[in-house]
Length: 363
Image (cartoon, rainbow, N blue to C red; front, side, top):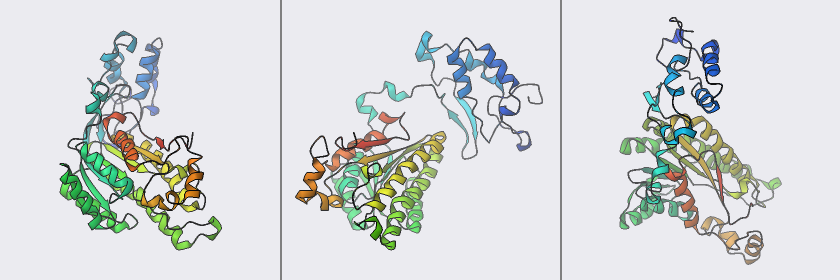
């Protein structure tokens, strides 16, 4: 109860000494639950709005308008964001949060609008060729201003120039994601030049050694971990900070089917990709409150230079195709289509997912 005898429920500003969650005195909440015992949907709605936050305290009396809304059986469309709950946010003042049960506006969009990225800023790493280039070009065709990034600036600039020639918008920024200083510097450039970021595609990766796990070289191990785990993690951290400031965004981590089914003589690479999948779930859970979604893409065998050793060896290729129900190798553009879904409003209720795009290999 607060000093005025009101029980706790909605986040409001209060001095630190007075801040508490409703768990400290749940009597008022219990009364509200009793009042709604014949309306399970309203009880659920109440409980969803009682998640404690560190920056405020709660008053149950302020939830009465919420509980008086009609149930979905009466009028589903009325359960919308007409009364968004305000929450004190130490990272940006009071921001408006839509009720968790409310559908997103994307449900009323046309198919074209669902995949429209007009005005969005997208950062794609490893974008100078292969899957990354295909992703960058498709996002640009859908309206995004794409930051084309890779280790070597010339390769980035070539892709950026091609995007501009097609009528899109692109900027080339070199970054080796295995180097922490370069990650810090490139996001400082993004902040200075654009002021925000809406989409991050972590695509750059390395696999410097094909060998039996017992023959793993320490330097190759460290390089793989630095790029595929540490690089992805801190790229996501820096991007997430920008997204938090601007109200949300989408992070897509390009992992691999090896995360689920380790490839022969690719032990360290497979381990790092498994870590990326779990990392994706961590970011999805911890960043959802900031409007940030995080998903992973698990490509199957794709015709890129990265997989050239497999694709160009007939014996290995035939063995691989025998395990793929679609009996063919993927094109980079087929990975780009899945990334577009995860980057756009079409996936507005999708987070923490590892999406297999593998021709049925893992089925």
